[in-house]
Structure formats: C-alpha cells, structure tokens
Image (cartoon, rainbow, N blue to C red):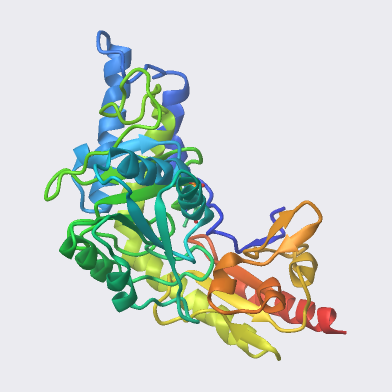
Length: 382
Ligand SMILES: Cc1ncc(COP(=O)(O)O)c(C=O)c1O
C-alpha cells in the first residue's frame, strides 16, 4: 500500500502522530465519562473535552460555547438544517441551496421537500461560481435558511461566503455553511463572514474519523435549533449521547496543529498542486474542471477526454490513490452531480478525476504521479 501515492486527501487524511498521542490515554488510562460530575475520572475527561472545544472554536474564530460535538460533518449538517427548519415559526418554510453541495446537504433538502418544505436549488456557472443576484432574487418572505458550502469537495471551488452571509442577514435569513473541506486548508472566520451555523469534520484535517462539530452562533443573532436526538441532554441538549472523549481530544489537537501550520501548509500545497497541473496539462486532451484562482490549494480536478468511464482511475489505482466524484450504483457508474451542474456532459464527467494533495505529499511523489498519469492516459486511448 505504501507504494501507492495517496492523492485523495479530500476523502480523508491520516491522523497526525501528535494527534494520536494526545488521544491514546483517553482510551484506557483516562477513560472517564465527561458527564460524570462526581469524581476525578469524569473531571479529567471533561477537561479534555473543554480544552478541545476551545481549540476547535479558536480555529474558526468562534466562542467555545458555540461548539457542539457530533460524529462528523454529516450529522452536523443534518442537525443544522433540520434543526433550523423544525424550530422555524414560518408556516411553510422555504430553504435555498446550490446544485454543487455535498450529498449530505442535498439529501437533507430532498428529505425536507418530501415533508412539504419548499426548496430552491440554485444553479452554478461552468467554473463553479455563483450569481449573488440570483441568490438575492430567490429569497422570499418565507425563506428561513441558505445552505452554501465554503469550498467544494470535488473541485475545491471557494464560494463568496462573506457576501452570502451579508445577503442572508440583510433578509433575516440564517446562513448554514458546510465548511468540511475548507477547515484546516484556508482561514475560516465565522464572525466576519456572518456564518450562523457551520459544519466541521476532524478526519479531513489530520484528526480522527467519527468526530466533528457544529458551530451555532450565540449572539447577533442567537440561533435556536431543535435537537434530532434526545436522551441525556449532553451538548446543551442538542446532541444527547456519551461524548467520544478520545475523538474530541484528537479533534482539538488537530485544530490546534492546523491553526499553527495553516499558512505554511497552504503555500506548500499550492506549489505542489501547481506542479501537478503543469505536468498534467501537457498531456493531450486534458481539461481543468473549475479554476485554480479561486480554489483550495490542494485540489486539482481534471477531465481526461476520451479515456472513457472510470478506465483512467482503474489504470491508475496500482500507483495512485485518487477519486472521481462518480458513485457506483449496483452495476453502473454515475457521473458526478457537481461536474454535471457545472455543465459537463455525462461522458466528460465520467472521464474526470479529482487529485487532492495533503501535508505529507512530496515533490517527488508529484513528479512520479505525473508520469503515471501520462502512461495511463496513453494506455486508455490506444
Ligand atoms: C463538503 C463535505 N461535506 C460533508 C462531508 C461529510 O463528512 P463526514 O465524513 O464527516 O460525515 C464531506 C465528506 O466527504 C464533504 O466533503
């Protein structure tokens, strides 16, 4: 496996060794329940949780009491969107999002639509950009929520989050931002960007899997949402269930690490991603999906014309771990909904690959990857 060059860091990242070290004691020696208020085992666990809450909050310029721990971004997204809609006093709430959102958002919207909630899914331009005027025009007196992601998981495209936040607040609409891919890669600031609710997932920034957070604004405006699960009343009654102390401690450590290294990592990733693009662009019949100017520093999404389906990925899989946005449904491949929303044809979307780089990626790996990609493209077109 170590022979295979990993270029799928948007799917998940390895736990940083320092993060793992911080987590380990909470599995056995310090195994207390953070809700046990009457002894030192519980106090130690609570201290770890509260430390992690402060570090996670600091990464996005929030207050610690605005962070609710969850099992990951999917749960945070469900809690945010469904929690807002359920709490809304509007008789028939209307919610808005974009066609390029992650399935975790789009599927929640689809579910709510079946329950009579009015849903608007706005289109995007060919590079993934949006028209803010169209967003403003879509808002109605019944609109309660706009959901827009910070950066796209497939193309890396960064949306104008600050402007979306300003529009939402101009009309007293709440703004939920799925920042799962942006966190740890670029600066995120919930205060200046007027974000009301925001999802985070630790495994995307060198933390453990199965732990995440939802930021919920406490002031101007104070956001009140409904819980999706009830029970012991943990996390301010919003997410009942014994806390995953090792995971949460790991997320806090990963957040701290990312904050310290954000700028340096971003520059290094952009340089490597540009090296990859320079090499790949020299191959015949290659097109960039999206743009590199308004993009996460680690992502490159490329269409290899006439390579057919997942042929390229299959050929590459011996040497490179990358991914397409495509999903397998029983026997057929489905083209990425993100690329199709950007206007790509079904065959072009199927012939596209996302390469996503991470902190461990080296120049040598990129050089080797370019050569593997060249060979695979030639092989596919024979
Ligand atoms: C943009 C985006 N949102 C949400 C998710 C879901 O995250 P999790 O795995 O933490 O549920 C992902 C994961 O790929 C993602 O990329």
